[in-house]
Image (tube, rainbow, N blue to C red):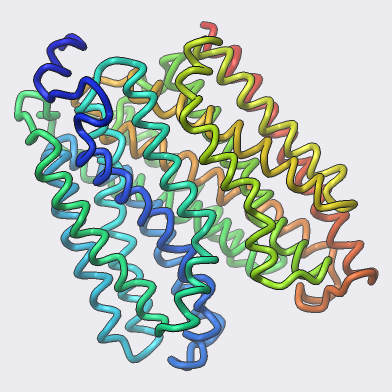
Length: 475
């Protein structure tokens, strides 16, 4: 389908022409990013009111993340066969009901079940966000602009989540943090129903769904994410992370063997071998690893080592939010002027530079942290937009939802690995708990040294991935 045909069919000659659809997809991505971060600030309140233990709180947060990250690939494949728009609308409806169910929660187990249901329904909607955006446009500049806008909304939501949660908790019960997702989901349903064309049966994937592959892929991703979570919370001195990691490796091997032998694989590995697709996935993994180091370390450093209040620490992250918002309108112009490959390399270099600034200078003055946050945020916005569009462009039309899920999953897994590496190195350096850190003490210096070591290690891996991706993209 040519660019003219598609844009004449949808009337999408500009973002303004299809603003209801862009609004709907933006708020879908927003609630996906906001959901976990906004609830974290309420965990102490939940522990008091429900009598939740530390293990309960772990599953309240990680249960959502495990199912959300683990099921995206499976639901992406289902959406390609069942209809991406239809799957999005069903997922949003169930997502609203799952969040509303928090009003009937009285025990930690019930809240864990609700969070699991929310994770499953969020995984139903996630692959469709970028796939439906590609249904609106074919012109590269409009796709880049729309993708940048949708991604900006989600990433800003992720960054301001704790601040929003803290403000809401000042005047309303913690259940409000989930109930407020209901009107947002209803708005998204209305916008998508009215603004996005119905699924075209001719563009659906007609091959049989690989159920064993979907099961094995889901188990592999869930175990990989769980391994990272356990490594942070329990450390590698416990046997559980090793068992989970071994299980992830075994199921991954079985998954690959199955996919290569089955007549109708869940995802054709030949598509990943395409230079544009594999390079973009490597860029996304690199960004996920790098950003995890800052997400784990900055707020802890500001509060535990420097003694800032939670509100001050939230304000300390403002450079990241400001740059994300400010650079969004210029991403398309940057790519147009520099070209896709050069812009991606420069964006990745900005992320790496920001990580180095934080690792080497962040302990000395907040100004260096602000510089690091600004550089990584700007680079991430450029790389994420380019990589997202390139992955989708490199796949057949009947596998766009699967491709979007693959892109999201690569970032989710990379981010979890980055968190696990940072958390493990920090835990190994401390003799007590994080709560024992006090400004100027030996534990504070040990924490800073560990953060430097972890950030430099992740920066080296990030640089290696970027180098490989840049060479691959030239192929």
